[in-house]
Length: 286
Image 1 (cartoon, rainbow, N blue to C red):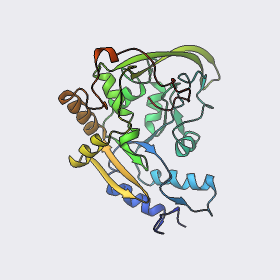
Image 2: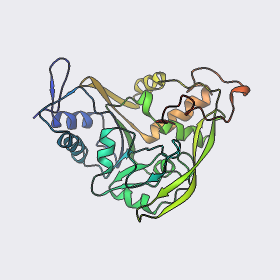
Image 3: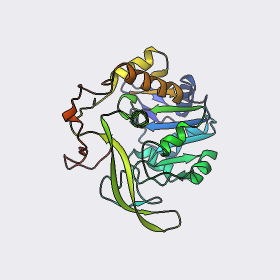
């Protein structure tokens, strides 16, 4: 039974996904970090939503990688909400929320940028002590950055607008156009214990203008053959090794300190003002 049908009428089934992901090297790693947007095209109306998400999640099992990670960011503290590791919903889409609820998946205790981890690495994350920050030293991203053989998969999602790892690298190399913003709230852990704490995230300075989409970065990665990309359905699939991504982010910033900015900043732009909440809408990104 097919899962999707494209605008041209082509049907896409489970095996088509597995074959395509193997072509872009998503199976050739120890840990696969998945950014997802599952609306590749029209869903098969005969499949119930729960069965549909289960079929998509099964695709990753067929890749036989040791660990699968999905971002299940809640941005709880940014939005003035408490964080419950078992109950707070992922804002990263339907697939990430379904993955979070799967048996054997461990969610990291991070009220801003939590990970859902399936595999041995989940036990390692359980023992890992986050230093109360979502990006930067001793964050979940920092722990992952120290692992070998990691790849990032963009499963219908677009690297140009969904690669949070870029902001981790920016924080690690301490770019001047981002600053640490600290939020406070309550966390309820796996034992049901609730406690009050602060949590920090690196965010853009008040006068800095970021690109809406880093298309120039994505294009460069494809040209350099670091990002393996292919159209799929009405969307796309792409995959990149963590080491290649980190090196490319750092090199581009070293060559051009405004590389990830829509326009150059001035000293007056480097205000420690949190701009994500200024429009009154919920925070859904860094």
